[in-house]
Image (cartoon, rainbow, N blue to C red):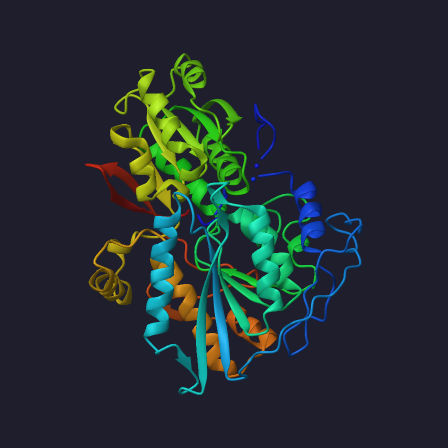
Length: 456
């Protein structure tokens, strides 16, 4: 979601950003805002991040980074205390999803009383909000500010985040040069980790220090978009119109869905990016209705005005029993149901894993413990945040000291991890070996699991 937010075909509106902006231009802005400079990637102590250098001219995505004024890294007040920080949207309609992720992280820490290494290391946890009230969702300036804060805080050894892939694109390079590892429970944009699956120069452009520091416990959208295309085919879809929110995650997953749909013989009637701040989409929906589609596929998140899109789709006469609406995991939350109201009935969503209620073994035990502790159902990504926190704690237990680079390396070396998601490993890119996904539908005002969806 996380993936935030989460690009083929030309959009009717300018090209995009919580699930895009032109990656080349976007990255230059990132580098200017963050002012990151090359640092020793192999040093064992926390590295020095950099502040914005006034008047500096950002290099291109593949070129040298600009000179910048170093920011001093604070020394930990207690060498036996380390900190894990989460960076998630705690403001706006993503709060419900994010709060359950925070709950999952707290659960993981509570299991060891927030300690590691037989009690010798104390683990603190800090929640940072990467959203603002003005934006109503994740905000680039807030992400940059948080990333610099984290990099400069010598007690921080791991970050859990983000929900939105566009946010991760901004923070990864900053944290990379400070040797801070990030474990994402929700970012699914393939270009963050996978060569040849995103834009030119991705993913290396995000790792200026030359080492990887980003991992994710959720499968990427090159898998999810393909699964969605196959699911649509199995649902009898023959003609589809594709929309996306012009953000990193949304456009990326829509690209993969479009390619898969065409390969499967599904007719793509059209494709365009929407203005997520539009007051309504009636004109667009009337245009789409005239093409007689079986389904509208939307690449985006709930925060991209998805509720209004669904309402206007139904209000112009595209009923749920005639025209399906499908989106990726970025819309699988209670906020979507709240926003769409009765028109949300019958909405389909894929998810990069299994819903909490469908987990088995250790996952089932975790699910019951979550409900008992918080007296509520966890949202889709809560288990993934719990797993991310367990990975971070495991790495701290292997290193047993404040050593960012060593903890980063320990996280990347995670193999055969037996967790609530099953038994899995990180590959060389920091991607999980898990590939099972799920199909879900809104029924009776709730998300219901339909079936597990296997990648081919």
